[in-house]
Length: 112
Length: 110
Image (tube, rainbow over all chains, first blue to last red; front, side, top):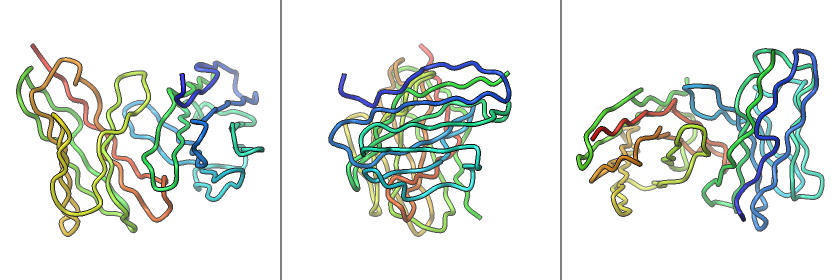
């Protein structure tokens, strides 16, 4: 499969715990994006990378959220001290510059 | 403020045509995307319009009027597999930073 891969697909955690999601983009794509989607809503932009550089972060991304793309390939999104409001689907996408975004199937987070 | 509006749900019968409208008010505009999303799956790219007019791609067509802040997605010869959410998204100043509408759930009935 040469699409965007995300894992884990589902994560259930207790409030206050830390969670980390991984995204493997399409190999020739140098841009990588994180979005968050809640039920009945469209995806909301969180942040994006060009190669290893994080170029923009949304104001939605509080200090508890951190994203990295250390070698310009895979990316991780960590949420510290999770809250119930963090429950959502976290979507990763990748693209070439000025190309359409290809989305992964997402990592669903449930915070109890 | 920034706003993207599309109807919440539309129902149509197999073989029919459905038009999903999207209106937008955004601070930056570098094109408009339509994505299809089946329940529990990734959004998949359908179309991109940056100039005014109609883009046709098989059974799907998309139209843009920048002066009116308006787009529509036309689905022809509806099939059961077209039952999905259709997301309108505006491309802002940073490529890939899309602002999405809430999606239109299309239900195709036999």
